[in-house]
Length: 455
Image (cartoon, rainbow, N blue to C red; front, side, top):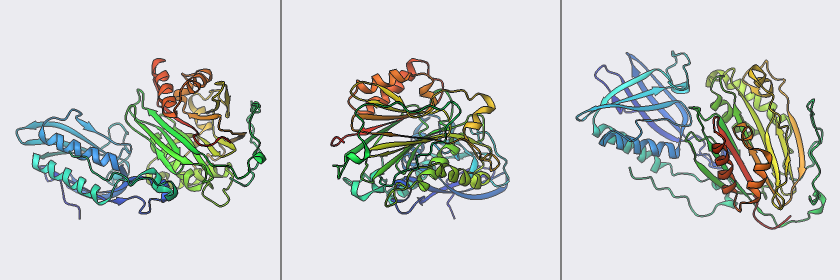
């Protein structure tokens, strides 16, 4: 039984506990840091309990800090939400030591009798009246649980890449040839040839370089971040306006899968659909097999089946997302995508940009879902396109959502990459260019290159 932390005179109550990591073994799901959250709540005489991995480690840490801040005075941010929409907290008012805190529930944590409600303002709600001591106690329990389940690092997913131990402190307050068949769209085109690309059979026992990867997201004007990013086995989806996360990988694996998924706005839970599809792709991809299994459209078809199986439980039936993947190996990059996508190969020496996907955006209105993966078993005929290009250490791979491609030209992306020395600078500069041109949508980007010996 979970101890209540918040309550009111009407007998309503709310309790939360952190039950551990979603995956006990950090090698599963790329060492993801999602925590399993359990709740027990009563509102208007009806009680329920639920559990779901809806908080990341750092989000739980921020919740504890927000609770402590609310115990002292009105916090700088009067509400706090998270990547997953299941829980949302609001500071309402204060009268002496009586503090009113509202808790809102959605999706997997809302009561079983409650119909789906909009993401931006989930229901039902619980308006509690508590003391500073109760909020401090709530915050202390969260921190105690975080200390019990130390923060994970991305490189825990591969012990060979593990560096120094993670900081566990809690803040105060290739080898198999891929199928070359390409499902061509009606306006398909061959990828242009680029001189100086290394042939696959020219590399024998290479010194394997690291793959330096940077991901970046800007939420823009929409209230929800509906893009998700994939690096190896880890999925990123940040709700804040401009977080930056960098992670290094080695292609000795011998391949790394990158991806961008864009939830289709106006359909059920676009953020959850995008994230679910990338997590499914990470589980289905053959990069970890020996030898690695080539990336083909079967991965996205299987991900669609999983999406449909979970649609009712996760309350995103009818939701949809567009997906673009890039499998990076020592000598090549293979792309797989469902719609016009921003996947580019940039030559560091010249700034020349080669699109690795169809880039024309013609999807308008209902036509968007014909280029997307929909959480509906009857819509399984979505198009899947595949391309392949040779790769050398002189190239940078860029994947970005339409929030970037709609505002920043290929040429501008090429010049930014050519004129910067670090991939995190590339990501920041490209998103800055989005801002300058009038950011209006979610904007997400993955930039990577080799940092070791030349191929």
